[in-house]
Image (cartoon, rainbow, N blue to C red):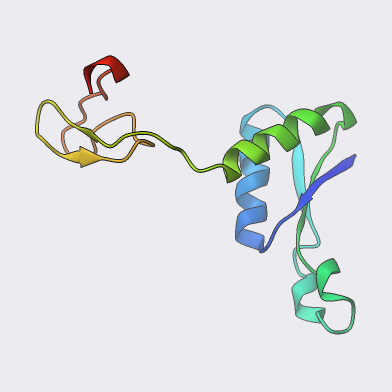
Length: 106
């Protein structure tokens, strides 16, 4: 078992662990409730930590978390069916469900 990273809060730690588990790496969140004793122990030791259960998953887990932290860059796109504007992170129109056109048709 290896620690992947310390999260700033429990919500982020849970999201990270869920992403790792979805990617096929068994992950757990530890130190979920230590924020309540901040001051009794050093604050930097109170945040929740995400651990992978298989040591061999550590490099892949760290890479996935780095990708999750990196904002998606790209151009806005407009749905060809309904004209709704979308950010680059969306692959489908939320208004009509049409798939994003390929990048050559922007």
